Image (cartoon, rainbow, N blue to C red; front, side, top):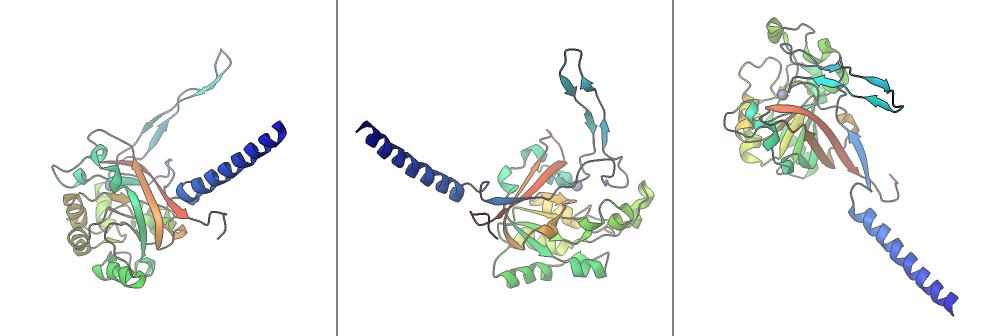
Length: 275
Ligand SMILES: [Zn+2]
């Protein structure tokens, strides 16, 4: 009798456990997602604006201490705007949120990829137009409203070759006029800011304004409208055009105009790990 009661209890427990695991898989996106890292590694090859010094890791102690345990700790030095990073609205507009003030809901959300690789391959100075954004909406029967938009120019594949990525490997103020890479047309930035309430926007070049820009009109408009900008985003080729969650978490620098950011995408997969 005691044995039988145990069996009934055991069966009930197994049933509840199976239900719980099923629920967890269905409800916890982390348990049923593939994670894509969209971040370039920070190292001595990391690309920065020609007028900036690069990332530096100052090596500290590394080794077994006299007490017998291992210990390692370094120091790092980096401009805010280099590698995969976010531009806070305060970067190009006064009285706008600094990087620590960006609401996290602007940096976590439904992501889409607008593929402009062909046009950017044909023209290093291509500026992504309103028509490119409208073409995405028409092709997918969806709106860009409320989305985090990633613009795939194909330039991430040039990383970390400065000549191919920026148009020049030179550094210093004289190199600025020699920058040639694609960006977002300021007219398209205004259209996104006024006609679509996007959460954030990012691309795989060093600046949301194309290399030859002198007035940085897309930066100004997006920052005025409190839209965070992700630059030097990596590995967009691994993403579908829609149907993923984007998470971009910058270093929380008090008063910072931007900062290094880990950008990842969560792609839905079948719970059984299928397709
Ligand atoms: Zn920046």
